[in-house]
Image (cartoon, rainbow, N blue to C red; front, top):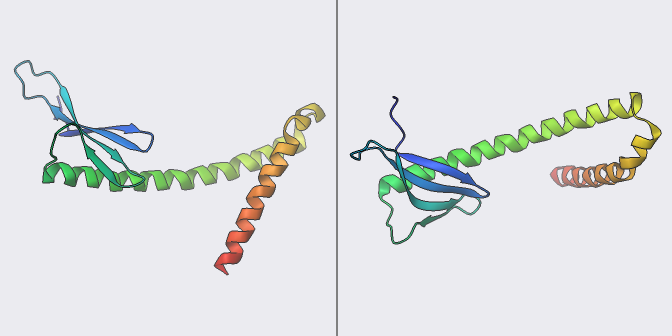
Length: 129
């Protein structure tokens, strides 16, 4: 069996619950002791209960938080590339396969969303110039 990491991070909406992993008990069972809750949006680290986090705990948690922020940023960019692909696929579908009834279901909503996006992108581009 490979050696388990010392910490386990259970991802939550804006961060994670942090557990210390222990297999050094008599039964060799995996025990996970929650030591903290973290929020990657605001950088907050809340020790669980009356626990005091060690320097090693804090170092590991901060490293995980930095890596998580980087992962989430990469996902955001990937989502944008996927959105572009979906817009192109939607255009092709609307042009070649969609029935008038299907187009009626979403045309106004899609046009408003695209207008909103275009307005924001044009404003942001003007701000950069």
